[in-house]
Amino acid sequence: MKFPKEIIWLMGAPGSGKGTHTPAILRSRGITNPPISMSSLLATPECQEQINKGLMVSDGKVVENLLFALLDCEPEVGVLVDGFPRSEIQVECLKLFHERMHELRREFKHTPLKDFFPRPTFRICVLYVDEEISVARQLARGKLIKEHNAQVRRSGKGEIKEERVTDYDELLSKIFPFHLINAVGDIDSVMRVILKEFEYQSSLELEHDTYEAISHIPLATKIGIHARQDLIRRLEHYCETEPEIFSKAVRFIDQEVTPMVARHAISGQALVRSRNPILSDPEIAEVVISILSERGYAVTMDERVHEIPKRVDPKTWEIILERSHVYALNVRFPQHHIQPLEQKF
Image 1 (cartoon, rainbow, N blue to C red):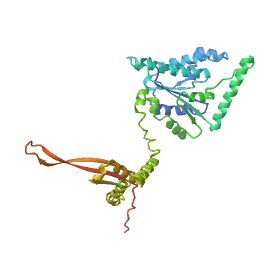
Image 2 (image 1 turned 30 degrees about the vertical axis):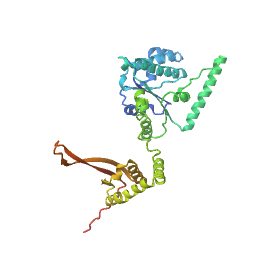
Image 3 (image 1 turned 90 degrees about the horizontal axis):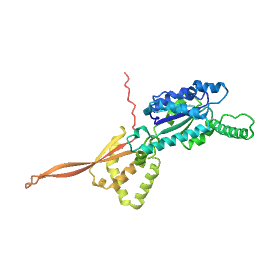
Image 4 (image 1 turned 30 degrees about the horizontal axis):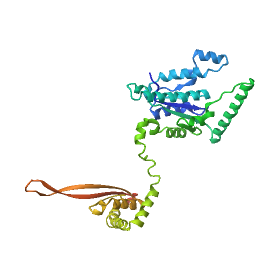
């Protein structure tokens, strides 16, 4: 037996759409285990007896039932838990559970038992049904309840009020990936927000060593954030400090690229092949691409080497080859659509 690798802890007030959106969350994460509902776990005769007596089910019993339910799941496909944690003690238990899973993972990582101790992926998801001010009110309510309960414990008078986990979302957000989702709106719009929140994140799902080995490679979504500023700096640098290189790049574009682009102006793409040896200089090639990029073209460049037989060595019968370098620039730009002329009869 082992615990699921991925566990989504779903919380929210009644009417926030937990039941409505649970199937979509499960599909988006590829989770086929049925969701674990804490209210169902507490429907046992023992728990019901406590409830019928007007007593609260102890946190220990809640956690015990939950752990057994998690062990009953198919561990490879993750699980969603609805309604946990609901008290500060349960939050602490969740932290300890997460830490212990990490400890066991480290302990058995290089042993035959490593598959029984996967790296845990915990996500906290809270659906709320108001604007941001609602969150502030929940936190304020939590503070008042804590002060009230502290007073009750000191004086021995009054009733202890339930301290909900949504009043401690700031604590959870510092420990686990935390998704606070505004569930106000139609089902489709809320669904899109939820699915966006649960998109693949390598830092959460890959093993630590694997992620560390590849994390230095820029994300595709972020590599272009400062590309424009870097482009301007490159062009200014070459124009001011390497004017000869800059001039050669401009002449090459004027003589070989611009005419070909003009010829293919309607298609939105031109393939420029050149044997011009100046492109063997990586600095000139960089300036050519940078200038075209600044002018709004999307450019990729490829160098191809053609080997042409020139002669045969009469002594060794070796075929002497001559290498010819061909540079291919794929230049893309907005396509122009021409309205066809309709003939009228």
